[in-house]
Image (tube, rainbow, N blue to C red; front, side, top):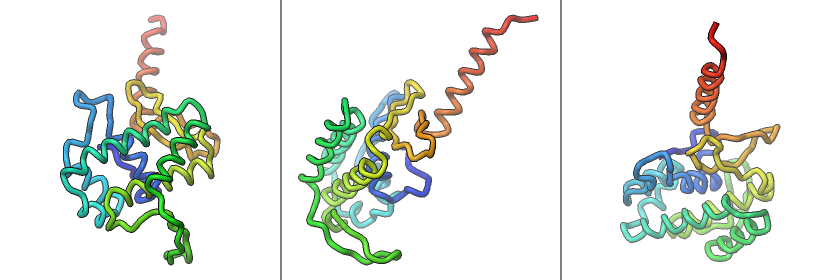
Amino acid sequence: MPLTRDETRGSGLAVAIDLVNTWDELNAEPDLIEGLADVRFWLEWHGLRTAATQLGEDDVDRVRMLRSRLDQVFEARDEDEAAALLNELAREYGSPPQLERTAEGWGLRTWADEREGLNAVAAYATAGLLAAFLDLGWARFGRCEGTPCRCAFVDRSRNRARRYCCTLCADRIAQAQYRERKRARPTP
């Protein structure tokens, strides 16, 4: 299961992207969520231990449905459709904003407490995508160009040129292109 390893780990954005990326076209069995253990591992990886303990076997299919709905945001035809999809998720899972004290001071919380299980996780992931949409724009939501990989990402690079989900895919494509150029060179 591909999981975020950078500074965004544990953020709502990383929770959303990592869930979307549990569908992997490179595998013979593309669904990387085989059961509750995988769902709990994903949540615990992001520090959502309380939410992980609240979920049961019945929630695995609900997690897959959430994945499908988050995936639609990355597959949207345009930013209006993406915004409509995010707003629908926010209406369904959001809660009234509340002030909460954080290590940096006061923050605005728009999702339920982790004890609410999947509903809290869905709201947290949605809030992460909403913030990325607002801060960076929908044009920064992308899919890996490292065919057949279709992993989702949000481009946070300065030059807005990200094309691959990770360095593994970028390296894989670069090596394939190198081998192709080498084959195309005439032999002396």
